[in-house]
Image (cartoon, rainbow, N blue to C red; front, side, top):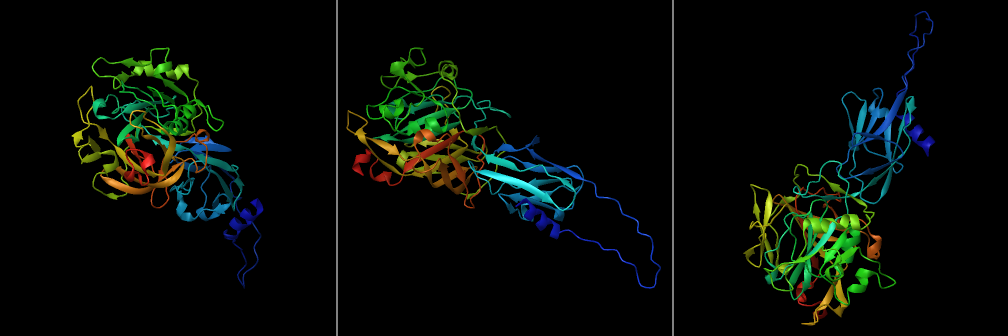
Length: 445
C-alpha cells in the first residue's frame, strides 16, 4: 500500500526535460541543485507526537515540515484514502499544513499517514483517537490541562417540599428525569469543585448505574429501592457494583440532616464531606476529557427557549448573559442559599427508549420503576445562546452492558459533525419516547 501511495504522488510531480535547441552547439551538461530532504513531524495541540495521539473535538493536528514543499507534492491519507485538498490548510510559507478533523468521531481509531514526491523523511503513521469531551461550568475551576478527578454524582430531589434546592447552579452537568408520579429527580455531576451545600439528597434510580459508569464517578444518594438495589450493588450475574455511598451505609459523616426541612426532604451533603470520597474511592478509568472554559460558539438556527411539559419546566432566554433561566411548574427555580434563579448555558433534550423495570419503586403509591435505555443513539435538541441544533445523541452502543460503557453522552449536528458544547452549566432532560402517556408510572404504558 505504501508503494501505491508513492506512485500516486509521483504521478502528480512535474518532470522537466532539458533539450538543445536546433542549430545551436551542444553545451556540456551541468547538474542542477539536488532537492533538500524534508523532515516531517505530526503536531497535536502544539505538541510533537509519534505513533499515537488522543484528540478532542477542539484539537488541532498539523504536519510540520523542515523546508517548504509544494502542496501538490504531498498527500495526506486517512485510513488509507487520500484526503481532499479542502481538508488541508497550508501555511503561507508552505512549511506546515493543518489537517481537518471533520471526519473523526469519538471512540474510533483513525490512522493518518503521509507520502511525498520529493526526498522526504516519513514521520510514520499516526493512530489518532478522539475522546468524548464534556463541557465544564465556569464556576468549578476547570482550567487548561485539567485532568478529570473522580466526579461526584449527587442525586437531588425535585418534589415540591424539596424546593428550593442547594448547589445545582455550580454543577458541571445535571441530568433530569421522571422518578414517579410526574415528579422529576436530578443527578448533579461535579468534575472539580463541589459547593458548600448540595441537596436535598434522595434515593437512586435505574438511570444511575448508566451515569455512574459513563462518567466514572461516585454516586451519592440517600438510599435505593429493593428492586434497584441489586443493580447498584452488583448482586446479579449481569450487574456490577456502581461506586456509590448511600446514607444508611455512611460511616464517615458524608451526609447531614437539616433541621429546617421535614423528613425525608432534609438530607444534604457539602463540598468537604462529598469531596473526601475522591480519596476514599480508588479513581475509576474514565474515558473522556473535560473541556476547560472557552469562548462561546453559535450553532444551529435561532429558536425560542425550550419548554419541557413532561417535566413541568420552562426556560426564558436572557440575551445579556447568554443564559437560560429555569422555571418549574410556573415558578422561578431558585437556589436555597443565594435566592437567585437558576441559569443554564446549554439545555439538551434527549429522546430515549424506556420500559417498566418490573418492580415497585414506591411502596406507598405502588408506582413502578422507570428504566431508561440510555445506551445507543437517538434524536436530541441542543439549545445554547438562543439557537437550537436538531442533533443526535450518542452514549456507548445499543445492547452494551451499562458497566462496559465509560464515556459520557456526546452529540453530532445535522451534518454528522461532533458538537463542541459551550462552557457553563449543561442541563440534560431525559425524555422517554411516549412517556407522556404514563408519567405517573411506566406500568400504565
